[in-house]
Length: 213
Image (cartoon, rainbow, N blue to C red):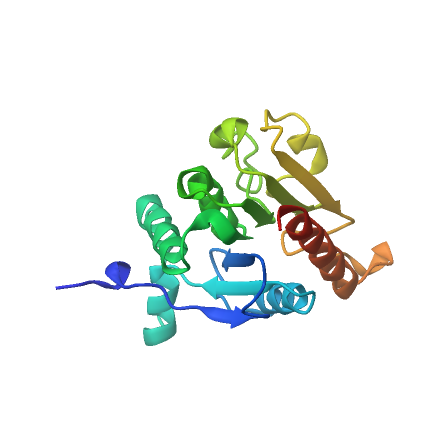
């Protein structure tokens, strides 16, 4: 008998089918693939000429069906879900994979294996908030896939002074979004708006895709 984690992924698509690359995005730990953040990024990138595909991990798909909040699946299940998504979309050669927080972190762990054209992480969880000693960076030192991390300068999962001390692969570029939190939202006192910061994130992602196309 098949279980939720055995099901093939289903996708939300934006953008032209004839795009030279598809950006595949997975959600963060707490919000689904159609959250306002995910929708804004996906539609913004799609409006610039790239195909975007969004999908959900098994625990989030189950929550959508029964309404019960669940913890994320174990790491191997999340990684398997990413690999299934890549296979369903025809393999990594024409895909840039990534996502928000958890989704981008798991993508970074499979990117080399699946042969992704690139990796885009929107708010990488370098460490849990308030626990800078619990790093999630070991695999990033040897990453071969060209990668873009789009990070808010106030992100409690990794601020500039934290990240500057990490050993990261030269394949990784970090773009800092001014005064952004983990969802790139700035404080009103910064003089910036959430719209400004999400537009900056979209610009960075599109520039990266242009270079990979």
